[in-house]
Image (spheres, rainbow, N blue to C red):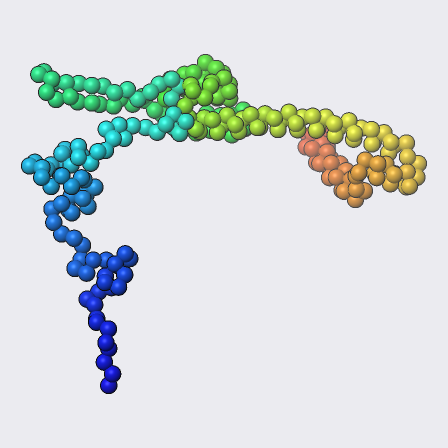
Amino acid sequence: MLKRTTPTSFSSFLVNPETSSAPHGPPRGLVNRYISLGLPPWAAWCNKVNKYSLYRMSDASPRGFLPKAPQEMDVIWLNERVRERVRTSRNVNNVYRQLKYPHVKTGIHFSDTLDHWVQIPMVEAAMFEIEKDGGFDNFILSRSGMELKSKYGERIRRHILVRQKEIKKNFVLEKQAGFLASHMIDELKTASSKEEVEDVFAQYGVERKRFLSELARRVFQREKEAAPADAPTSSASAAV
């Protein structure tokens, strides 16, 4: 029976130390314990290690709990900001820092341009300004980005502007379509043969079957709308 000549290692640490773990588990010791907490090595030589000393040694930003950047905020701030109130004790040994946030409400307003309700967080002063400006659309369009300080406000502003362009474009297209339709009907009235009618359809790019089906639909809808108005007169004549 052949025997292995290569020595058997305790773990794969000797074979590939870069990708394998330590052979006897994680390193122990007070210094490694504080390093695992994200603290510097000299934290092991501190006499008093409490929560406050751990916070001071972790080198955390003292203003890390403030809100996001102005262009990333969700709330419509309207020139308001988070204020910091600083209070001290009588002998000025302890300094207390307190953040004062503006009063934020969830505003639900109707947008005339978008034709639906818009729900967005805003400060209480913004609600009064919406009433002064005469609507949510006027308030959003008349305010600058630095005054709103809200990514939601900028997004709604973009939606309103795009919708306004669409309304103007649709108005022009409907006007042109009505102008072409009136000319096409005049030419159809003067047509005397089937070939002339087909030439008119080809000139304006209208399919004959689609035109007839749309015409029948509109005639049926007009008769349906006129039926309730004729019903009381017929019933009255029958009663007489």
